[in-house]
Length: 220
Image 1 (cartoon, helix red, strand yellow):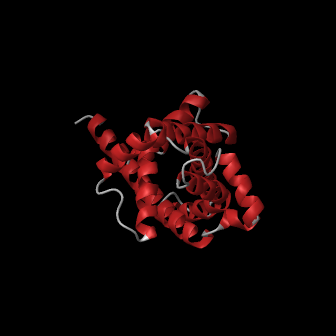
Image 2 (tube, rainbow, N blue to C red; image 1 turned 180 degrees about the vertical axis):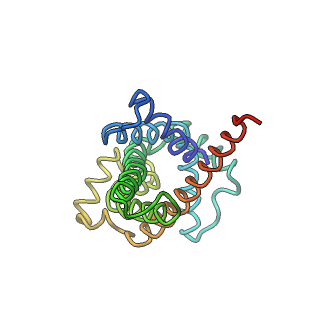
Image 3 (cartoon, helix red, strand yellow; image 1 turned 90 degrees about the horizontal axis):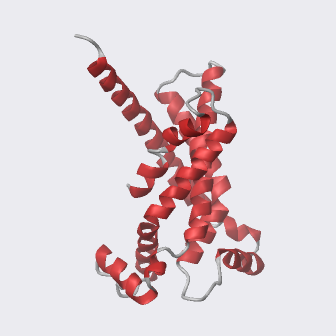
């Protein structure tokens, strides 16, 4: 909720800000808007991502539960690692969300505009589904390396890596380039389904809101 409401909910508004209200937004404006809202979402909601990753890691380890609740996880991390621990991995996460946001939102916009301008589809559900599926595939290809480094770094032991860059370099040296695409298929299934559900829902909600506003403004 915290990530999506910022990085997706503010995207159109930020894009209009960069284009100064023009209806013809270039690729640069799309990229700037995607990067801005992606980075802003991380700055606000990074602690929620840290807690999520820690919970998942401990569940996979199969040992005793270190955190008994979400609130306890926040308190334990803050107590043991300081408040900076809640923002651990912010730099790679900013990079990851800027990349993911640009890949998802910009690719979706471009695919949808191309389909509409070529008269291959009309602006309805099949077009939204196709654009979202394509955006999910492109996002997986572009964002997988950043996503793998972000997860590895955020879940690392204290002082295991000096920085996100050191983590990426260590992975490259020890595991080779293929390490950056570990889990590609499950990642694509996750991002592909996420994009389809998110964009289709977003388009329908936007239409409903526009229609509701229009009906309120219409004279009796």
